[in-house]
Each structure stands twice: as structure tokens, then as C-alpha cells.
Length: 221
Image 1 (tube, rainbow, N blue to C red):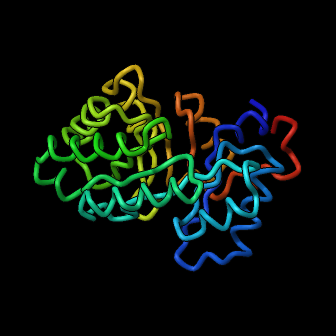
Image 2: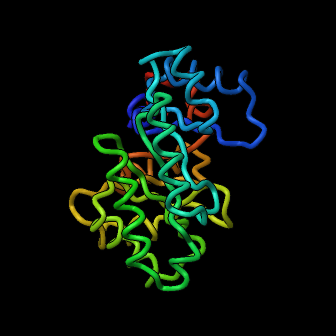
């Protein structure tokens, strides 16, 4: 697989609390040059990116990030504002406390509500696998499927662990046919990137991919 092919799956990410506008410009310029799937950025930068780059970049942002325990009404407001500002894709974090309390129907209802607000825009659901048991992960696969979300996503990258082969294989077993997979967190080498794509992940969330691929973007490695 060439690096160009891999980068088409990458949500080129900059979500650090101290991200500057210079960091965001560099991210967007790289996304345009290397044809990544999107840039994944803090909500506060969406409008400025859209005003600066227009349709040159596909903007993704995060909601309820990174801890997930905002109330649904707050997450709805975040989604509405993000879409108004020019965002196309939303990566939401589930209420992990609700998951741990076994309130799976409540989590499913929240995902469904946010998907209704997103409409035709893509909704990715971060379940933060590092905190969940296998039973809870399976329950989240079902909740994401039943709620009509577009993607299930492994991790925020801010938890105690990131994407694993085992979790992606579990997702493939339990999600519905219309749900795609995004791996994120700890994807730090070209081998990682290729492995997750070959496992069936349509998107990879990482800040490292372009840096790894610079100078190799039109050839294999």
C-alpha cells in the first residue's frame, strides 16, 4: 500500500489544549498537500479554518471531548454550533459513566439524538475502549448501530490506551453493516497505519501520519 493511499484514510489531527493558530495552519496546509480525509481540530478553530480555507479542507471536530460526561443538551449545542461554523464531521464521546453504570439505552438515545442533529453530516462515536470491559464494548457496538451513527471509534487519544487490533476485530464482529470503523490513539508508525487499514478501518485518527509520510507520499515504503 502506498503512503498516498494510506493518507486518504487519515483524519489529520491537532487537539492539544495549547494548539496555536500556527499549528492549525500547518495542519491544514499539510492536509491539502497530502490529501488527507479531514483535519480534526478543536471546535474553537472551525469558523476561522472555514473562513480561511473554504472547501479546500474537510473539517472534523470533537464533541463532549475528551471525557464524555457532558449532558446531552450541551453536546447538542456543540454539534449545532460546529455545523453552523462550517464543520462536516463530528466525533462525539459517549458518556462513559453511563456505560459503566449499564445505562446502555440512555447512551444509545444520546447517540441517536446527536445523529438527528447531524443529519447528512458524518457522526463518529468514540467509546474509549481502554475503560470498557468486553461486554461493555459489545453493548456499545449495538448502541452505535441501533442509533444510526456512521462510525464507531476506538479512542480519544487522551485516555489510558488507544486503538488495538483486538478491539477492531471485536467491532467487526458486532457492529451492523452500515457502521464503519475509526482507529485512533497510539497509531505511531507506518506499520500501524497500514495494519489498521488492512483490518478494515476506513478512518485513522492520528497527528503523526503526515510527518511519517513526508517525502514518500507518492510511493510505497
